[in-house]
Image 1: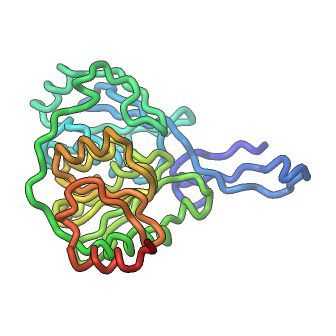
Image 2: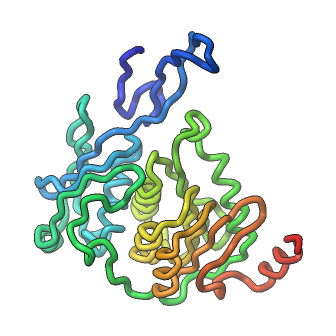
Length: 288
């Protein structure tokens, strides 16, 4: 097997490697497969290491910014002073984040030794209070036709370049009230993809209260928690939610959708944000 460069610029597409296939269906294979990278990403705040997350090595500035905000490390984007890819080695990538001194002091008070895996957003959290944070309920928020959300979820699939190349990554996207799919981010981890999306949108000054977040995964409680923390009023998942995700969504006044695919959906909380006329039209299309 060939040794491959795991840096963000390998083979022209960030997060993509090409490794030889030894056998395919029992036959020797002479070609390489496109495979998604999974790299340790060390997040360092004000010179102190805080977390190591395994992620796709692309859009790491977006990832660091989104993680910092969605985890409540800072309260506003203005408290993030700088994000820099500080080091890229064969062992992983170090990202240096400079935050306001008052935020760093609070972070030290609740500091945790956290090593995150791609399937888990909170591995290593030291206390139950840190795992499930108290969330202020969302006030109001955009209302949207359910057809807009369904169409955006389908359109997002076309923009998943790394998924089409490897078949191994999740995506997160954001659709605004006008029906525009504003941006899409991909990662081997579903939480990371959402953090990358939020970081990218915040850097562009997008109002997160004026649209819906879309995810190509199940809706776990961490995804709900991150969305509520950043004021996103609607979260639409292509797969199922967990019971804890539904309970937290109801408590936090988030509209949570699951199974958004093939023209169908299930709404588990706050259906008032979905236009009534759109709801009726969808119901008429669904066989009894």
